[in-house]
Amino acid sequence: MESHDRVTHHSDHYDGYRSKQLDKRKYADGADVCIVGAGAAGSVLAYELSQAGLKVVVIEAGPYWNPQTDFASDELAMKNLGWQETRLVEGQNPLRLGHNNSGRGVGGGTVHFTGVFLRFHESDFMTKTVDGVGEDWPIRYQDLAPYYDKIERDIAVSGPDHFPWGAFRGPYPYPVREPISANSQLFREACAKLGMESVVAPLAILSAPFDGRPPCINRGFCNQGCMPNAKYSGLIHHIPKAIQAGAEVLSDCMVTQVLTDGSKVTGVVFQHQGQSYKQTARVYILAGFVVETPRLLLHSATPHFPDGLANSSGWVGKAIMPHSSQDVYGILPEEVRLYKGTPVLALSQHFYETDRDRGFARGYTLNAHGSRPVAMAGSIAHQRQDGTFLWGRALRENMLDYNYYARITLVGEVLPHPDNRVTLSDEKDEYGMPVPKVTFSYGENDKKLINHAIEQMKRLIEAMGGKPAHVIDDTAHLMGGCRMGKDPATSVVDEYGQTHDIPNLFIAGAATFVTSSGSNPTNTVMALAARTADRLIQGMRHREF
Ligand SMILES: Cc1cc2nc3c(=O)[nH]c(=O)nc-3n(C[C@H](O)[C@H](O)[C@H](O)COP(=O)(O)OP(=O)(O)OC[C@H]3O[C@@H](n4cnc5c(N)ncnc54)[C@H](O)[C@@H]3O)c2cc1C
Ligand code: SF4
Image 1 (cartoon, helix red, strand yellow):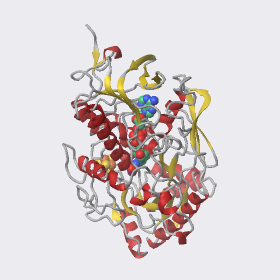
Image 2 (tube, rainbow, N blue to C red):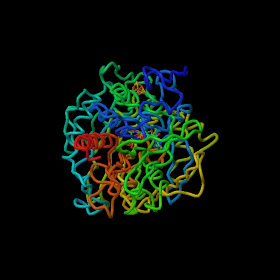
Image 3 (tube, helix red, strand yellow):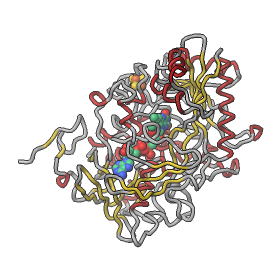
Image 4 (spheres, rainbow, N blue to C red):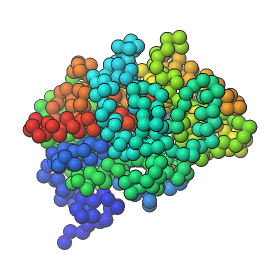
């Protein structure tokens, strides 16, 4: 008789067990939908599509984490939640890739994200029309509004009764998190002194019990994976519910090739423990995030698609965007204790919309942002904006004052540029796939925005009664690389994520973003995924695929 290994609490294929023989998996003979990547977008799609009765298989490169046994209150150990495989970086401002921007494992980036859960503004979808920069999206805010509503309700987002900026003014489904951290309280008081409005941050973190999960206990390890399950992730919410509805999740399975017959996708190849397998379905959705989705498309080139799949426009891999995410650490006369509480508990979007008097287009969000000590030491040692390094006695002396530091962080819009892109290098990884090369340089507008934000962060630190001490260069989040658009000559997918070139191939996730906005992206990633799911459910019913 075949032996079965128990995998984790709910990563099962058959009644609590996963077959060692992947040939005997649930949908070995074909599924309705095959999703590559179980991150923010993949999790929502798996949930919505399986609830609608479709046979769904999700193939995820990383592990199926168990928060209670796999997570630790340990900054260094939990770096393993990030994507660890080698990537080459270049450009004038090469990105630091890994724990800070990509997830790997069921839940993807949501497992160690900070949980700040914002909507984009109306202007974000039409920057070309409104400000003459970037590009317009093929959708408007109103197209996503019902999906933002649904996602926020489904995961019980906590936030203020009144949100002062953008089209959505609240109230959020769950009340704001209380108490807020000292860093956030000081930030809010400083904002008030300078005439900037601020709010307690909308968060995908519970302020009261929900769905069998407890409210947050404020220990501040959100970027290490939340052990009590108070923070939302696809791992603990959408994926288990999708499995209950019949979906199959194949974790530790890396998709290495998308197979085509010249007009449509016929399967994907994935590897597990050195063995290759094939999965077939009617529709395929690539939700592998900003670097891996373009990489897979480019690597799957055939004589029919010589420049890579879905790439007749030449835009696969192009116009990737991080958020600029400079930090200012300031030293205060009183203790702040940056480790306390959920990292972000207050924010301001006072500088969000374009004001031409500032000398640049678009804007940003400012977050009161906690920091754990190892992260702070690493940043002030070698990510310094002035290019200097802090080490030895000077680093030690600074860190002895750790309890007295406050911190503010930028989420700044970076405009799309085709030269910022993912390409394939000549080096091969352990799967025989070309290692991706990620090129990034800031444009002039991006640099002016960053300088403006740093000045405001310094003013805020001073208004707290402190002195700006360290300005850190960093980026956060990633978007773009397979952007959506109406014109197949200048975009990769349509407004639902369907590729212009291959009808049964969809792309979901942050890769489809046209512009980056000044807001954290995951609410938009998930709302777009829910909208794609609706489109697919209709399409499947009408036998379009
Ligand atoms: C430290 C950190 C803090 C963040 N904080 C916030 C925040 O506060 N608010 C916010 O809105 N956003 C935040 N983000 C960003 C957020 O995590 C991303 O926007 C979001 O996860 C993107 O969703 P996605 O579905 O596109 O990709 P992901 O969630 O990254 O999922 C992609 C998945 O695909 C898998 N995959 C990739 N390639 C393959 C392959 N070939 N085969 C099989 N599987 C594959 C990956 O392993 C991964 O699990 C943060 C991110 C990080 C890392
Ligand atoms: S602070 Fe709250 S959300 Fe963050 S890890 Fe702790 S319990 Fe989870």
